Amino acid sequence: MMNIIVMGHGGYAEGVKNNLSMVVGVPDYMYFVDLNKEDNLSTFDNKVRELLEKAGDKQVLFACDLVGASPFRTAAMLTAENPDKYCTVAGLNAMAYMELAMSNEEEAKNAAEQAVKTTKGSVAKFPE
Image (tube, rainbow, N blue to C red; front, side):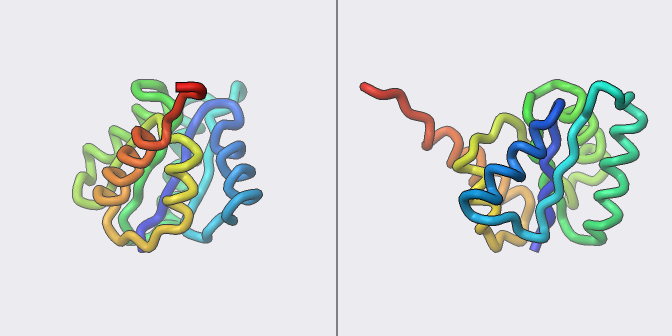
């Protein structure tokens, strides 16, 4: 089983955690870390690296709130250093997070591809 680290700005990760808790539960392989106003990038990087220590040798999928923002850049740099172990996605919706929370996927890259597909497929407008 891979580990998933949800990362974002000012409560995003905690919000995803609370949403999952209400709907499907939070599995022990999901971790959550927010970049808060009082954090600098070094502090945030340290928080992420502490979670990576908890993840051990397992693959990690970083799920970030915004493409190109600081949490994404942190995850992307770690992924660039370890492309066989880590994968980064951004912009997932609640449906994709629920699917990840119920997944038994071993490979971070496969989970990333499925999460992006789920996000794209679960966006709707009503009425059509």
